[in-house]
Image (cartoon, rainbow, N blue to C red; front, side):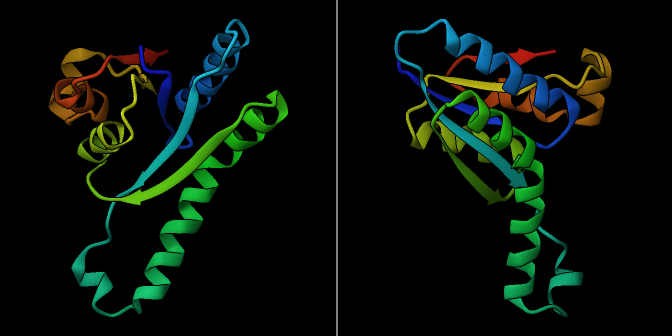
Length: 142
C-alpha cells in the first residue's frame, strides 16, 4: 500500500481532529507515511477579481490558506512529523482528488462535519463529493 496520505485541512474543528488522528496513527508505525497537508481556497467571483490586482488576490488566498493550515502545522511540528503543505485554488472536492491522484496518495484523510448523510447530499458536502470522485480510500474522522 502506498504510504502517502493527503490530509485535507480547512481550519475547522473537525479538520483539527484529523491531525490528532494522524499523529496518533503514525506513532504506531515503523515508517510514517508521507504527509501532504492540503487546503483548497474557493476562487473569488470575477465580479470581485476584475477590480483587484492578481497579486492581491494571490496574497489573500495564501494568507487564508496559511491561517487554515496554521494549527495543523504546529501540531505536526510538535509531534516531529515531516509534511509538505499545499494551498490551492479551485472547486474543493475535485482539487483534492486530483492532487491525491497526481501525488499517488494511498489515502485521503478528512474531517466529517457531522451534517448527516441526507443533509450533506442536499448541501453538496465536500466530503460526499470526495468520496464519490476518489479512486483511493477516504478516511473520515469525526
